[in-house]
Amino acid sequence: MKVILLLCIHSRQAVCSYVDAPCIAPVLSAGPESNALQLETAMLHFAKRNYHEAMVLYKKVLDECVHNSHDEVHAASFVVDPPGFSGRMIAANNYAICCVHNCCVEDGIKALESLLQSDPMRFFRKELLFNLCTLYDLLLSKKDALMKKTALKTVGEKYYLSHLQRKHYLLH
Image (spheres, rainbow, N blue to C red):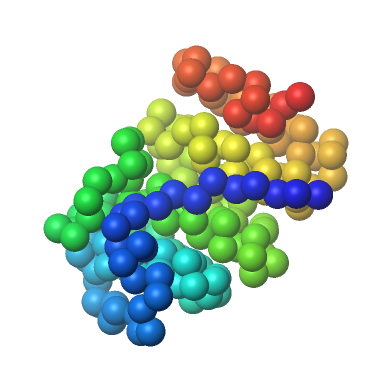
């Protein structure tokens, strides 16, 4: 089975500049600026196929965002955020992808489900749904995955998210 997941790149310039770098930048202790640096550092680890290290950093950003009730990640070094994506959304999505590489798909599902439950109007995005539904297909039986994806579609309809189609839920 070939699996394709959509990675959210927060700063293409940072990744392109540092993919061949021998060392990774230090991580600050806390706050939005630290989260921004951690996101960049996690992306560097991901680009170097250090999925465990990237997963740990993405998890730190998620925990910091939830613990301190802030969602945004700001840093002057970022070129442009992907339209409509917050730092928390990028961290949760990329954390889930790292979980696949580290054989802990269930943790990735929990992270994406938690994000979607926290603010469906904001976080129900086709990229996140595609990845979450792919994780369901990887971890669950066909029947259970279909049930979960149908439940997601019902939630999407409840919040009038008409831009989402059956294909975004991987319902064939």
